[in-house]
Image 1 (cartoon, helix red, strand yellow):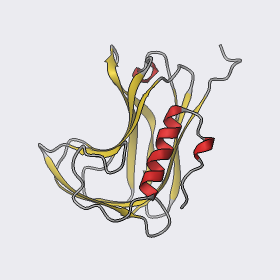
Image 2 (cartoon, one colour):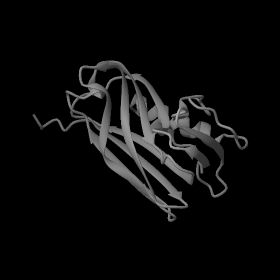
Image 3 (cartoon, rainbow, N blue to C red):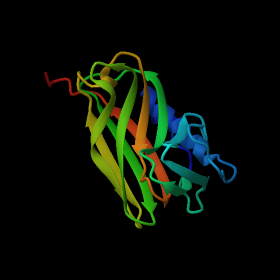
Image 4 (cartoon, rainbow, N blue to C red):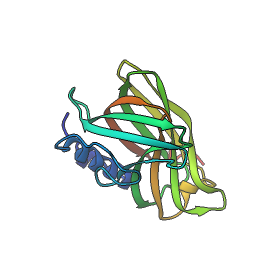
Length: 192
């Protein structure tokens, strides 16, 4: 797989995700013992609950032309386990649509839910949860989640720091991440 054409990315978060993809494609070798909350490449890290669970995580370059293969050995019952893409500071405007396109396959069927964590938190909290889940299984699929930003959501605040969070199963699993893209569509000018 080749790095995405970054000249097509026009939004700040599109450019950040394209840089993450390029960094994953450049991984020289396997990373074993991935640490909790420590980036494996710039702006991408895994996070899990260390009080109720333990995770032994391995990330390796894809052997089949995708981005990376991820293997998680989970013990206990962590309350959360996530893949986090730090998009950084920026602003989402009400009416914009955020699109997440993720291509993957997994040994067993699994669902990922996504949400945007925005800081500082607003009165409504810091998380904007996306309505739809991403579904993966043994056959490679391309899953798409679209989210229209609403004025009352945390991600609509001016110049917040945003992290795209994808929930992972709190059990052992293997996943081949083939590709990931984020795009932002402007609101239709004729809608009031």
